Length: 144
Ligand SMILES: Cc1cc2nc3c(=O)[nH]c(=O)nc-3n(C[C@H](O)[C@H](O)[C@H](O)COP(=O)(O)O)c2cc1C
Image 1 (cartoon, helix red, strand yellow):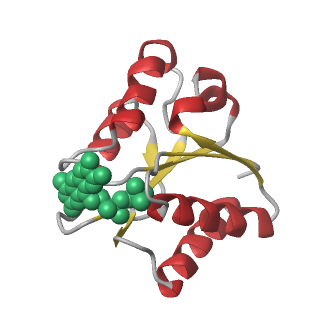
Image 2 (tube, helix red, strand yellow):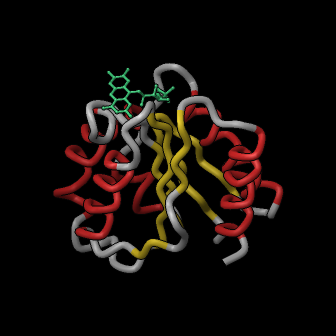
Image 3 (cartoon, protein in one colour):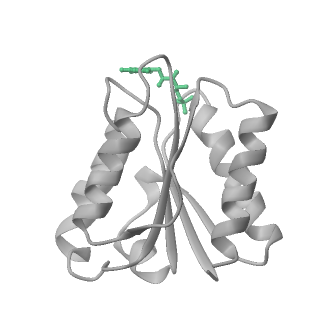
């Protein structure tokens, strides 16, 4: 994948650290990466990339409100234009597991997008091992 869009939200930096590691891995493998906070991302970003990586913390057992806001803003326009576009999801949670990540997968699947790898969820602050896995995800996505 040449052009990879990473869209994420993060308040305390855990999901952001993962986003940056994914970007590092993808760039090292030769991809062009656009790293954007969800509040700053829009329709043109989604339509202009070859693959989408979405990152969200678990807030109240759902995706972060700003990630939901991103989907709310783009859905009506991009619907019908996202079929088979590759995507992956990542994020951090406190103790509640993966419902936030799954809520993003449901929307991407609903848009007809194609999940390329298992989503990566980590508890609270990512460990060096978690970040390594994120870099590998970026590298693998770039290599498709
Ligand atoms: C408003 C809010 C709601 C949260 N709700 C949950 C939750 O329902 N389940 C859970 O496992 N963690 C919950 N957490 C914990 C965060 O998912 C966790 O701290 C995560 O690492 C934050 O990621 P970030 O640093 O990228 O913002 C919540 C945190 C906040 C700030």
